[in-house]
Length: 544
Ligand code: FAD
Image (cartoon, rainbow, N blue to C red):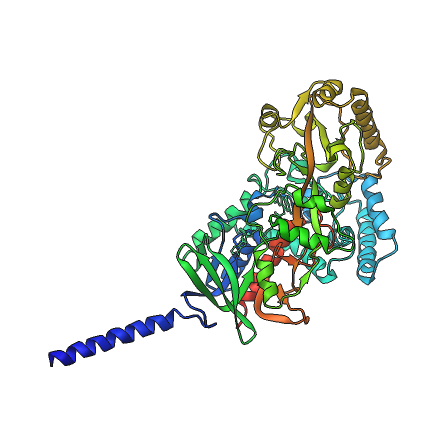
């Protein structure tokens, strides 16, 4: 009897062992611990948080995976400029003849295609109504935003995606506000809604918190408040998709607990960001351009990006047949810190209120232009080096006014990252440029403010630079953004090389391509990641 009991006990033990081994085996055939949720989101940057929040609001449980030891990605260190039409704030801005001329130049040019022609017609009509009604403030509309974005990307962006982006921005901004996003409450309207570098129009909404921390703070607080349904795994790097019968059903990841399989009953959202920090990958794709956008110097260029911008998600998606688009379009900015490539230390507070000079103290471009144009102009200057010049009006309160990176001008001057002087000539001596040249550049800029244009065709102006103290800060070209990535449709579903949807897989943010074309407009990335992150999360949660 005792022997029978022992045999029975061993049998039960073996049964339990077999059952637990089976439970830990993935549906895709691999091995490891398995965790399951309705929706798996890969990458805890802005797009990932937006997707997780939207999926949760769609009734799903969510697992959010992040390879780094903190959430945030590039979103966390971003300047915070969020492009979105904002009639309330824009109605308090000034509309100049130069603004009007800039609109007319774009609506009157020969259209590239039907999409541009329709946008031109709509914007022309909207501007006529705006003028006839004598509305106050700066004209803007989602169509004007779309027209500028499509044109600035050289018509490589997919029209439907461009329109989805701009038309969804005002409601997405509202959705973010409802979910705890705090926007600047600064009484100076030009601070709350400004023109970011390469933003082309005064529609960059500024968050209350410095850099991109406010966007991530919103996401983290949302996840914490809903921790029963959303789990964030840090230091957990997704390595490959699990695909069953042509459908993406999960992802393998490696982390502190070893390898794990994360299974999704509804959908997987890829939100791993771009590949700006992957030097080999960005050089390889740049060199595939015809002709390459940048020369071999791209390899040694510094970058604004965080180290997790590795392109992992793009490679994972490509390995299961996803189509990649626009991979050769890599954005460089003329605004890097000369030592680190970072955007921090930038003394500009808005495009209208500053200009650039080279080492000779000469202006050399339209400082309100496209980012690729400005970077190319800078690359042609001695040592690819420039000085940003502004005056006291950018910092009415030098101790408290902060740039997008939370820095005051006093801190930057003390740290030797900016120079301050009471006269233009003294400033010229501090930065070692010929004083007569810098004086000529200031006079030229101020003449442009009065005329509303200049020899470079600049159209974004606001105030003369004539109030001491005057400031200068050095800048060089730096790698910033990768416009290419995984192809998606309007529903944020990933498209394969045969032009068909990959079931179960959605993507959003810098990991995707096809929105910004050859050149992303400033402030359009934070806009993109929240619009498409929200769409991806909503649609992943809706899968049945
Ligand atoms: P990210 O925010 O980069 O998030 C992706 C996340 O995925 C990261 O946390 C990454 O670690 C993680 N990840 C990567 N691989 C894996 C993996 N295998 N497994 C799990 N996790 C993974 N745009 C604007 O519109 N306005 C601005 O003012 C602005 N300023 C910027 C300033 C700087 C310094 C930089 C670098 C960019 C700026 N941009 C700005 C661009 C914008 O910030 C980015 O395009 C955007 O934040 C990308 O968001 P994302 O969610 O797609 O990617």
